[in-house]
Each structure stands twice: as C-alpha cells, then as structure tokens.
Length: 127
Ligand SMILES: Cc1cc2nc3c(=O)[nH]c(=O)nc-3n(C[C@H](O)[C@H](O)[C@H](O)COP(=O)(O)O)c2cc1C
Image 1 (cartoon, rainbow, N blue to C red):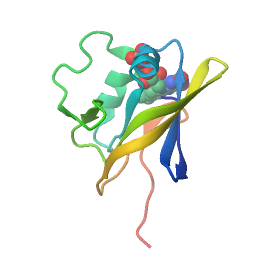
Image 2 (image 1 turned 90 degrees about the vertical axis):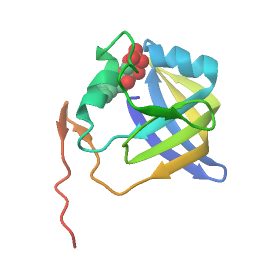
Image 3 (image 1 turned 60 degrees about the vertical axis):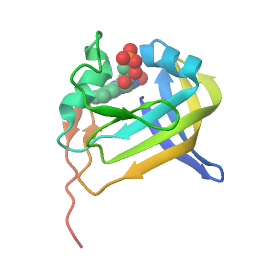
Image 4 (image 1 turned 180 degrees about the vertical axis):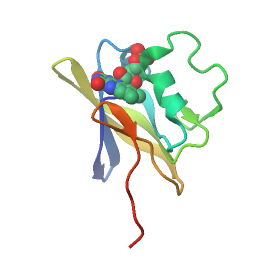
C-alpha cells in the first residue's frame, strides 16, 4: 500500500490506500480481506519483493502462515493486522479500503522505514 492509518477503536479499524493498477488491488477488492505486515529493519528484501518487483511466485521461499480471515501473515514481522474490508472509497488513482481488524499481533523490535524514496532507520534514543 502507499499509505496506512488507524481509523477507530470501535469497531477496531484501519485504512490502507492501494493503487487500482496494482495486482493487490484486485485481490483485495474481490476477496474483501487484507493483512498489513509491519516489517522489521532486517526485512528490507521482503519489502522489495512485495513492492511489485517480483511478478511471479511472490510467496516462493517466503515463510508465512494464514490467519483468521485467510490472509497471509509474514513470519518475523513486528506486527500484523488481519482485516475484513468494511468499505472501499475510490480516490484518484488509488482506493482507500477501510478494514475491520479481526486479528493482530505485535512484537518488540526496530521497524523498517521507507522515507524520501529510500530505506532508512529511526534514529531512536532511549530516554
Ligand atoms: C518500498 C516501497 C515503495 C512503494 N511506493 C509506492 C508508491 O510510491 N505508490 C504506491 O501507490 N504504492 C507504493 N508501494 C506499494 C506497492 O505499490 C504495493 O505493494 C503494490 O501492491 C505492489 O504491486 P502488486 O500488487 O502489483 O504486486 C510501495 C511499496 C514499497 C514496499
């Protein structure tokens, strides 16, 4: 997706923005499910793989499991948010999908950052 945000606590919901030209758009629009995987700093190769560069067998040699909606959860991520689509709002080239959170997990670790067209790390310091 190009953007992600939390939406509400009741019901627990999030939104994602997806280009309607992306293959993932068709998968989400027809299956009415999606899973957001929050990658850790050492999972850059997974981000590149799923950014559209790998066109065939995207899940070959990738460790994942299926969560409650049927969507794929990548192993070793910092967090995942497994959703059922509640609403779709077309907006320019993209669609905004609002998803009801069905299942999720979170773990400690450093997130992978993509900023200004490049991968980066947070310059975090313990306070
Ligand atoms: C590093 C990175 C950069 C991305 N940049 C954009 C972007 O600029 N605009 C956008 O709409 N989506 C962006 N995406 C999301 C991809 O377009 C999205 O993963 C898309 O679904 C991949 O294409 P596919 O569904 O055809 O495999 C980016 C994803 C990654 C991992």
